Image 1 (cartoon, helix red, strand yellow):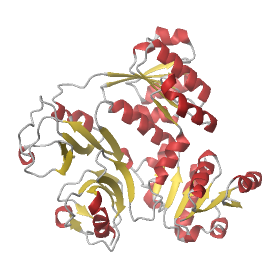
Image 2 (cartoon, one colour):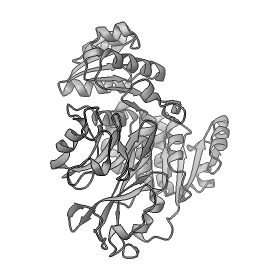
Image 3 (spheres, helix red, strand yellow):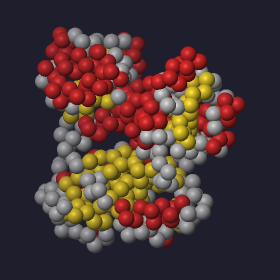
Length: 450
């Protein structure tokens, strides 16, 4: 595949290395001539020295005929402009790295659609989602997050206390924007129908709004209330702010420790239900005074790797059950990947690795992207963009004649995302998240793409 990358920072350099190693035709655009020269010696890629937001530079780099165009600089505006130009020139797929949450806010304008960009990705937000998955769902089977984080797919076990046992699904009034997709019973997975009756021990795949799915999924577990979870976050970074938003449910008791007093005041104003502590987690005295050792989770996400490691180890020694942290330096990544278990670290995330992992979900010659997985290897979660030639365009979901075993988990139409009902209309340009048996993926994609 022909891939053009703008920006040779940590993320861009890492992506170009991975892609060149798998024999893709990679062109890297970098403004610094010195960096460009060193990269030509380090990697087997074509390097163009120039402004990645210049139409002339992009054209000379082959952006108009590339399969994937990835704008990965640390400047949001440059990435957005570069992708808009590349799309106009003819790039088949464009992705822009962003940091400012302004561009993820679709309440007034959908920036992604307006600039004709296929994907906006925020490394800090992606890290926060990974942390949130582990914190919000530690005992359930799996959780995935789609549609800009607005839709979730959970897998939960039906308990003996559930009032749904023995009832056909047609007789159960599920909450709005919530439905059952697959049921796993005795090691076998099957699609749920109106006649399906749930049994104790069934693992059900539940689709719903991320705002309230965890609360509403208690109907399967029979829990009267969700247990409280104490989370301490060190560093009021973008990752911390995104994570705080994802943990806004009352079941999470969140505390943020931050040395900068002005940042503390800003966090306290924007998150009145969160306890903000002005101080440094490197102070053992502060951690002991705040009883940090009683917390369920300690998440160190400052921009200082050494502080993240040391405060994480200190929190572990005090008794915190789970330690999560972010790492930015490549050398530290390699060390911690081998030693995290010995050091008692439950989850170590690198923004560049999380970003690369997300992008690789889309770097495929197929007309769809794999966006998640379930325990059954014969079932796939895919994202498809509906084309104007699709046989389904303009039809309601129940009229689309989807292959057996296929479920539309999320429908993203312009500025809105939802778990669709059978009466929702599929329109050209919509992005759909579908759960499908492996054998029917190509048939489903053929219907949606044409």
